Structure formats: C-alpha cells, structure tokens
Amino acid sequence: MHRIVLLGPPASGKGTQSDRISSLLNIPHLSTGNILRKEVENGSPIGLEAQKYLDRGAYVPDELILSMVQAWLSERPEGWLLDGFPRTKAQAEALQNLSGVDKPTLVLGLEVPKEALISRMEGRRECSSCGKTVSLKEGQEEICEDCGGNLVKRSDDVIDSFKVRYQNYEKLTLPLFDFYQEKGILERIDGTQAPDVVFEQIKQHLVSEQVHGEA
Ligand code: AMP
Image (cartoon, rainbow, N blue to C red; front, side, top):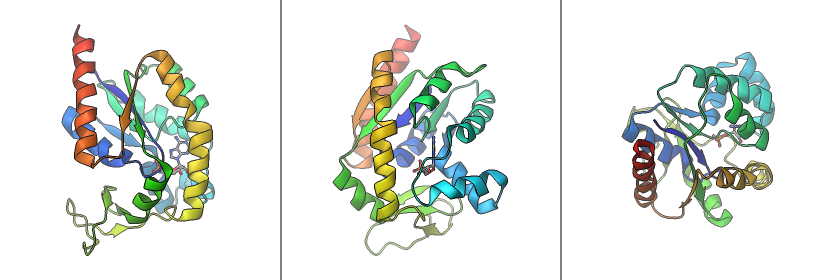
C-alpha cells in the first residue's frame, strides 16, 4: 500500500511528478494548492479565506488545510499521494496522528536550486480546466493537450510572491526533510533533471518501497 508525500520548493516539479506517480500506481492524488485555487475560483467560504494568503505567497493557516486534508484522506483507505501537504511541522505531526488515517510510507524530497526555480516559474502554466501543470515551450499554443482547456499563468507565479513562497519553504517546509529522515522514510530526488529522468529516479524508490512493503 502506497501512502506517499511529495516535498519540494515552488516550481520544483511536484505537480508534474504527482500526475505521473498517481497514474503509474493508480492511487488518488491531492494537491492542496489546486484545491485552494478551485475554492478561490468558486468564491466558496474556504476560497474567500484562502485568497487572503494565496496571492502574496503566504501559507494558509494550518487548521484550514488540515480540515480539508483530513476529510479527503479519511475517504481513501486504498492509499494516496499528497502534493503540497504537509508544509509545516505542525501539519506533518498532525498527519502522523490523524485518527482513521495510516501514516505515510514514503516521502520523496525534490531538490532544485533557487535560480533554476525562478526560470521554471516564469514558463509555468496551469490548465484552467483540469489543473495540469505545463512547462511552456517557445511558440507553444496555450491550450492543454489533455483536455483542451486554456493554459494560464498562476496569479502567484510572479517574482514577489515567489520570493515569499521560497522564504516560507526554507523556513517552514525544509525542516520536514529532517523530520522524515529521522523516521527513515525520506528519499532525496535530484529535481534539476528533465521530468522523464526525475521520474526514473522516483520509480526506483517506488519499486524498492514495494519490495520492502511485501517482505
Ligand atoms: P502550490 O500549488 O502547492 O504551490 O500551493 C499554492 C499556494 O497554496 C501556496 O503558496 C500556499 O499559499 C497554499 N498552500 C498549499 N498547500 C498548503 C499547505 N499545506 N499549507 C499552507 N498553505 C498551502
């Protein structure tokens, strides 16, 4: 049974790799960022609250995220993949102790230096319909090749917001590498390579997790 957490800085490729992992393993995938953006778009009470934080790159409060994630996880006993959660020590500790939810079995930590993240962020687009993340190539039409939706730049993909997100990442999320290392479930992934190469590295860890899980 796979219960996987994907950690990494903004624009490190978490969305792209999450799509691939969840298709490969046939497990459901939750992106807290995607859910929050949808809530904002729908103007729901959660969205109105989250909007205050999203555009300036701040993390939304732990309680808001936790109630969303707990509801989702409690309906998915068959395994899962989390992209963008946990992002703080309080969230990671809560995930270890959520009632009725088993603990993560594997944490994949994507490592990409800051300079590379900035140029990736500039070319990043998201499908307004299916939420797929795309790295725009020169001359490419801004249409999603999966569903035909429009590819749009995220409103938080601007340098000021990126700087805040990156600072928060270093201060609040990076310590989770140690948190999971101590639990013996962290695998560090070199995220600087092309998506296919990164996925090959990830697959090796998924295979070895399967072998250990079955032993
Ligand atoms: P992402 O799509 O993962 O880059 O997330 C976009 C934004 O959603 C972040 O910059 C935060 O404002 C918010 N967000 C997503 N996940 C979390 C989380 N686990 N804790 C706090 N804020 C979050």
